[in-house]
Image (cartoon, rainbow, N blue to C red; front, top):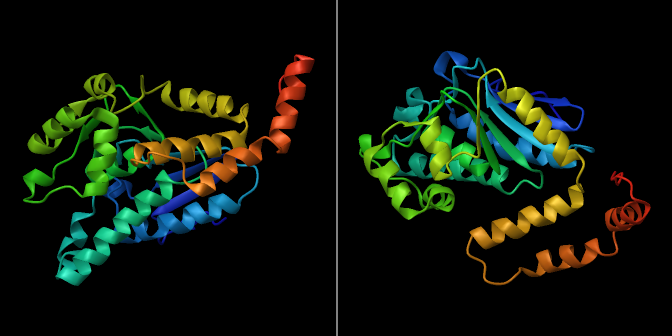
Length: 263
């Protein structure tokens, strides 16, 4: 696994079993450049092959913003003609999908502004932990644009249709307390406590079976994506757990009244 992607705009580090992606454009409030979206599938693929990782954290460099959204300095180029627009929009979708469907639990650790494409990336994570002065918005209606089907699907999944309409129609900034109340984020902490809270949660994830979590995540995503029955590969993965080493360790630990030691 490399420690830098997209010419240093994405930094990746590993602290034991927890990996971190840092959005690294603090001078632009961690705006998401096209190269960053294009690099995310590669980062996800590298994380998948890295042994012993049980959680991924994503945060913005500098602490002033998780991400202020798309890098506006690129708009003239990426939206220059229909072909480049389609290619750019696909890169955004692919980048978000790489995080959404990653076989690891993912947490967006949010400080400051989390807007537009930045919020789209946070919504692609499994959970969102935010500081109590964070702010959230999705603003395409202020730019004469709409929101993609995939992005809107993720938003509706978290907050429901009516609140998604409110956010998208107005583009207004939501404070962290309101974001928590409507389900946009999952936890709100004082700035001094956020990192420790995320660390503690990642440690809790580390006590569970990574094999179980991977299948559970795929199952929940399939249901959220509208599946009415399990895909064949998911059935196979579910059945395989019963003959897998984690189940054997789990029930032996239960019988012995000790904590399981999963690899």
